[in-house]
Every structure is written in C-alpha cells, then in structure tokens.
Image (cartoon, protein in one colour):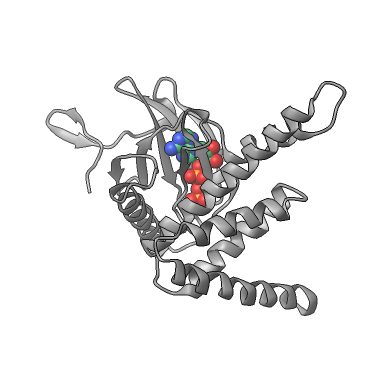
Length: 254
Ligand SMILES: Nc1ncnc2c1ncn2[C@@H]1O[C@H](COP(=O)(O)OP(=O)(O)OP(=O)(O)O)[C@@H](O)[C@H]1O
C-alpha cells in the first residue's frame, strides 16, 4: 500500500483536501463514498474517498472502510491481471480512505442502451434499418456483458453491485466494457453468491430498462455460452431460478 507523496521538508503527506486541487470535480456522492475527477500531474484520474460515518464507532468505521478499500483494490487487481477491463489502479491512500484510479472516458452502458432505445423507437424520421441496427447494438452489448461477467465470476469475484451504471464504455465502444465500483465485491466460490450477483443485475436491469426481459436473456445466454467453465455457469443459472423464486416469495409474503 502506498500513500500519495507530496514532499514537504522530506515529509510524505496525503493530499489534505481533494476539493482544493485545481480542476477537481465531485462526480457523485454515494452512501459510503464521494467520487471526484481530478487532474493529477496532468493525468485525469478518479479519486474515490470513503467518508467517516459519524454514527459508527471510529475504530469500527476505520475497520469497515479499510476492508472495503482492500476488497475493491484486490478485485480491481485480480481483474486487471486476468485481462478483464477495469480502471487501472494508480494509488491507494489507506489513512485517507482513498483510491486513485484511471479515469475512463466514455458513457455508461445505461446511457448507451437508452440511446439505442431512442433510436429504435418508431418516429417519422426513423427508418426500419435504423431500428434494426439499434436493436442489434442492444443485443451485442448484452452479449458482451454476459461474457465479461462470466469471466469475472470464473475468477471467483462476486461484484456485489452489478448495474448498467457500473459499466462504462471505453471510448464509447460497445465492445469495450469497463466494470467499476467493486466496493461491495468479495471473493467466493459459491454458486449461490454468483447467482445472487446475477439476480441483483436482473432486478436493476429490468427496472432501469423497462420491457427488456428478452435483452436480459441475451446476457444470460452469453454468460453460459462464453463462460470459461460452462458446467459451473449452468449450475449458477439453475441456482438463479431458485434465487428468483425466493425473491418473489419474499415480495409476496414479506
Ligand atoms: N474510473 C472511472 N472513470 C470514469 N468515471 C468513473 C470512474 N469511477 C467512477 N466513475 C463515475 O463516478 C460514479 C460513482 O462511482 P462509484 O460507482 O465507484 O461510486 P459509488 O457508487 O459512490 O461507490 P460505492 O457504491 O462503493 O459507495 C460512477 O457512476 C461513474 O459515473
């Protein structure tokens, strides 16, 4: 682990206040972390800073934040090492609860799918060809999502928060999905954990992209077809059926 070094009388210090940096922009404030885009020595990068939760005991808070950071860093590193596209890790500043990573220039998969839906809508200006192309683009990106998640699961990484907002398109290219936000990720060999990961994605996908059940099926088909371990992938998808059933029962009976 390293600390961001700014030498000051031979002292190594963290940047005190991210917002004081020129060109720093707050991109999002989640429940646990703030995400900034900054310019560091001329390089655009992302700083994810887990903030102190006042309702938690400080020691416990530091322990939880430290664990989440470690998990995010581990997952990012493991993915990168195995050729799965994730932001490159630049620095980890444990005392300040910050991770510095590569800034990915590109839209989210969520936005990409919205754009395709817009193009595929019947209007006076759209042609059948535009609609067919837009539909094919949706299918292609869903196939890519399934393939890449199968590879992540094959590394025994459970993402924990799979949504189309947590997938970015490097240079806006649909064949270049970059997975982000591994803050809730963990290591597991259990089919159940991976099935729940797919269930989280399914719920998020269907609610973010209405009437997209057939598209989600593309994700599942590709997940199984492209998994490095097809038998395991099949077991995970069989388990997904059970997870769905439990989810429905929970909704119906509380
Ligand atoms: N490497 C990156 N490159 C470009 N944009 C990014 C990058 N990482 C995050 N973002 C942007 O910042 C937003 C928030 O990031 P992220 O999802 O990692 O944080 P979070 O959801 O607040 O964290 P957590 O869920 O762990 O509390 C993302 O939706 C994305 O738009």
